[in-house]
Length: 35
Image (cartoon, rainbow, N blue to C red; front, side, top):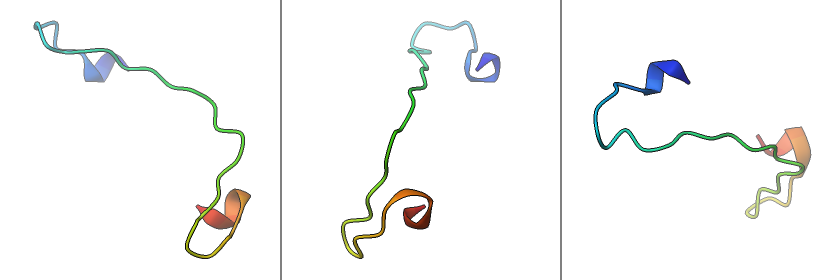
């Protein structure tokens, strides 16, 4: 995350959040198969 910061105004914020499940809508695949 340090690499995303330049120290200049406008850097914004970087965050991460856990993903419990993924669904590929087109095929209906779930979990790691959908990645």
